Length: 298
Length: 298
Image (cartoon, rainbow over all chains, first blue to last red; front, side, top):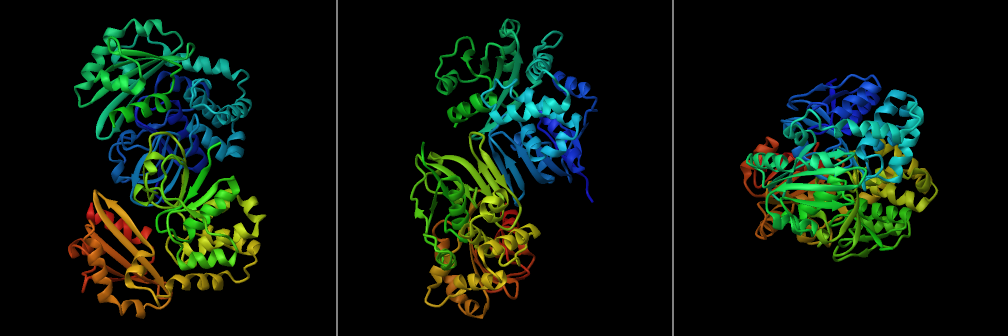
């Protein structure tokens, strides 16, 4: 039988990595990844003593299960010469494939929640799998503060924490989230690249990066460098490039950008100043940034 | 609370109608349809004494659950001004929507099978709901002869038949399938239109109709009229138009068409004669016709 690979999106986050590892483990498939681990994910894998999946460079000729993504822009190189046998996701859907496949997506906070509830008995029997999915949920829902978070994410996470032996899951979540929030020793380019996604809005290529911090003063002090960095990214074929500096304690996002300020004003109803706007209450790229930009660029 | 409507595809078949009725009943939603019932579906509703859903003319401003379809070409008018809250389907996926939603699709024979297994206890408690989903499965899988049919379709149908009080489900299936197969008193245009779907293959509009018959001599004797009818359909903006005359006993399809014969030869590896080819073993538009044509027109 051909091997089946479980893979998350480009610039993988903790959900993409942990969901791939757990689903592969449950099904006898092979977990793989598309890029480097971020610090938060590396911490989670280290905490539960699980090795990182191998990098898969190309989908050519492979059988793939795609977790935590469904859009071509998030897929592995040569995915169109792969056989996609299944998709499990929680993002908006932009998917076109020639034959019927198993495709399951829900509007909830984390792919890991879906995998946990669909395989609850198996996951509850394995503290390591439970711990990985707990990490994915705490990460993707920003410790349940993101507007994408649902009661179901919280209920499943609570069950998983018990199994994984995590007594205070909120404290564990904060420890997890601070790993990526640490901007010391990283260049602005590295910070922007570490969680950066491409989108195709009506034929226009748009890039949106995000960092979640526990205190936003330091990242906001780097505004000029951020704009310069977005400007040089834009020259590689983007219509516009965005960078979200999201303060998970204040629960708001400073959105830096290069591109047409009128489109940004149309999208969010706020007039930009110095290539940036502040959006109180905004924490989710998927739910609060992408839909607005897709409409405004449409 | 806004009403939620459950709707199947254009030119609804028994799966689109029965899955909409059952899912709406289970969830407290309202079943609707996009067009006239075919004779087979009318027979099934009459058999289980269930009224036909109302026709919904426009999706404008409505909350929709789409069953048995996900492509824009199969959706209700003004679906882009509706709020799609859920999709349950078993076709290939070509779906683009701006926000995350609940989307579930499986590569099995019938949407009704998915609805039955996801709500098994509720469906088993209601002989009418069980009978409607049984009809959908027998219809869509061509009494389990279609290559889209799986063991799961058969197992679920067997359970549903017991609940619905159908002792011989195969005999019931044949009675059901003969209803649409009766070509007496119907014009060729009516026969082609009764199960006709539009597809968008790489920007080219392709139409594919199908009739399933228990004896193909009569429909094949109308070859000239069929080609003439496809020819006049083609003039309304199609790159090519196809009509499958599928013999469910012989398990093969005579595929009539107007359009480029070289593309058809490329798609099926058979040289057309008189605007037609015979494809032994071919019964499924979704699984055996659409993928080949999509590649050939791509």
